[in-house]
View 1: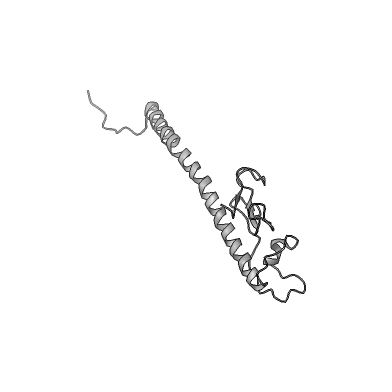
View 2: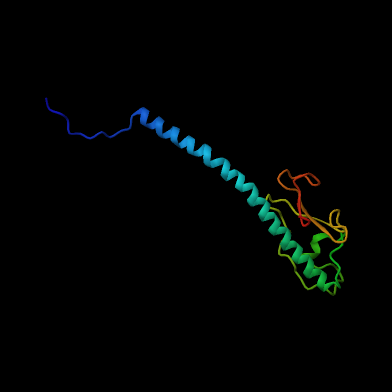
Length: 139
């Protein structure tokens, strides 16, 4: 009998299932580690945004005899001059400051945690202010 010299050109069902099982095991090990790092990376990015905003407030304060923006003025005075503000040398920020989740940072003066200064706060992962996961310039 003559054997066919044709090479095998397809995978068996068992081989395909084995490869899928191996990929699922690898994903089960890798995906949780990646997701855990994403949360920590978001917290780090938010801390960097808070520090940048803090520097903008310090520059504003230097131009305004050591006074940071008032709660009434808020952070908008870092982007655009208020009426009749002759000391303003900004803009101190190009756009409103946001955290890693895309939410605006909150500014409070006097601060709840920095009673002799100001608080810059991100609502954190849950998006709710004054909860356990808040991130701020007091940390």
